[in-house]
Length: 214
Image (cartoon, rainbow, N blue to C red; front, side, top):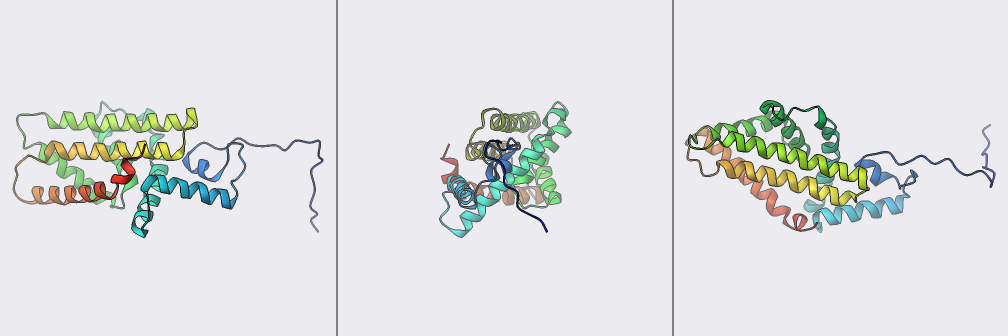
């Protein structure tokens, strides 16, 4: 039969440092010990309140989704140093891998969305819109990477990093849409673009309180 062993008073407990990462910050204190259920719940509530100003079920669900998205984005960020951003295909694929962290849209549909945006750019013969687009995606990736570095280096608050990361992705998406919104085309491309823009506008309205925090 197992017996409970007590530690002698003169022996200090062996504490492990808290693991790196966003999820670890939510689950563990700085000394590596698990947060109590009460404190952990309060911590998460504080984070969600900061992120969404949530007072409805819909907004609360959105806040949870954003927090989860940032956690997934941190995993994608581990590929940053291995990505050649001078290669346009790698550049865009990396941005898409970050973007998909914040949307329930299936990857196949997401690819169609970006195909539509970049196809529209080919209709503007006077401007090199694709070059601008790839600079937008490169800059967004860099800003997200710097935010996660801040999290690890300065022990920045989770909610602050989440704020930065999500705001960067939302701003980059808006800039991509602005590049092509004045291009006049007919047919399926224009219809698809309008669907994308409507969805983006809806998200922006839902998150206006979130974005105002910083």
